[in-house]
Length: 120
Image 1 (cartoon, rainbow, N blue to C red):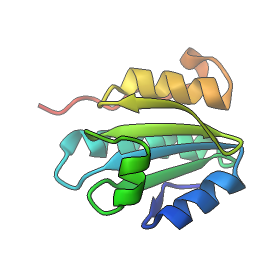
Image 2: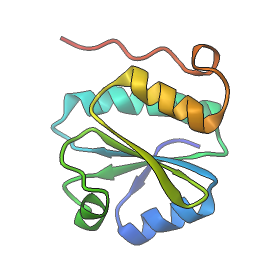
Image 3: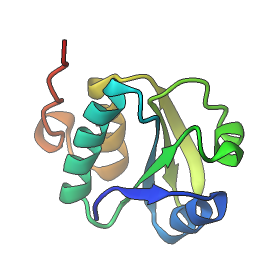
Image 4: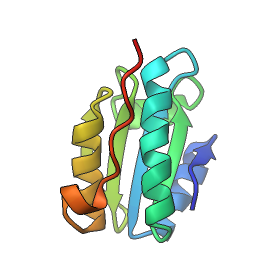
């Protein structure tokens, strides 16, 4: 499954309830590092079609921003069986890959795609 854009809290809740593993990326259009993190999430989404990979535009869904105390983007939430299990703030591709690998199985070296190169 590819990245799914979520526009409402109800839509988000439905996705989280429907999948065993969900990763959500809170992003903003003006944030260049968010685009690099989307590339990494897209790679994981292609490798793990049973999991859900969501995107929430942080400036558009205030209810979710408040629920997860999102103070900066990129910001990630990780859910298993409907429950929030972890978060990550910042554009740390290595930490994101490690957290995804921990939730999705496999070893970081074997399952995690290479992190996108940082742009200058």
